[in-house]
Image (tube, rainbow, N blue to C red; front, side, top):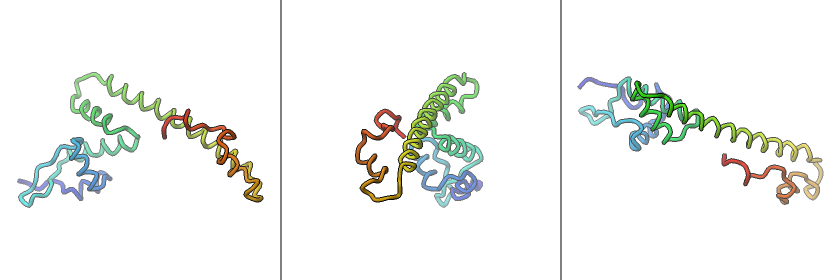
Length: 146
């Protein structure tokens, strides 16, 4: 058997840590590669491309199950890309909701900090708002989970 790419080299080339590569193999995102006579994993260029796809998808915030579906679609180049578009569109909606929630959180924190007189704790706006949720304009129970 010819020597393929070692796990260390595929890790360096893809930017994915070795334990994460093993995890992706374990959950079936990355096929288990053949082994050398010394029982070492032996990857090829296709594995590296798939791993790079997974890493990029994770960086963009896609969930493992979404990536699994997207990889399955990638393996079927002649099928419609409608499902991929639906996954990305749903993810975009989720990201926009998170941004809106974070923006509201940012404004509330700015209001708290700007209201601080740097006096005594008994008159501290930050402590006051944290102690009385009714004074807070940001309500996490109505915000999407971050």
